[in-house]
Amino acid sequence: MVSIYETDDTGAIVGVEACVNGGAKNLIGQVKRLDFEQIQEGAAIYYISTFRFSDKEHLNFEVDVQCAGDSHELEWQQQFYRG
Image (spheres, rainbow, N blue to C red):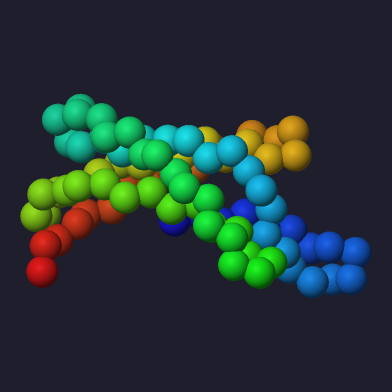
């Protein structure tokens, strides 16, 4: 899930619409494309993607966020476990 926020003229924090794209790569280099869906709840805007994973799988995420003429690349690692 990715959320982008800004402060409006009144000082309130509001969600911002953006273009969100990315993928996740496992340790042997297999890439899983992430298809983000926009969800809006009041002033909040979320971008959510689902994907499959194996137990104890390590994934490296790269997500590109473009909004208001700016582009930001997010990168992080996560290990996933099945319950």
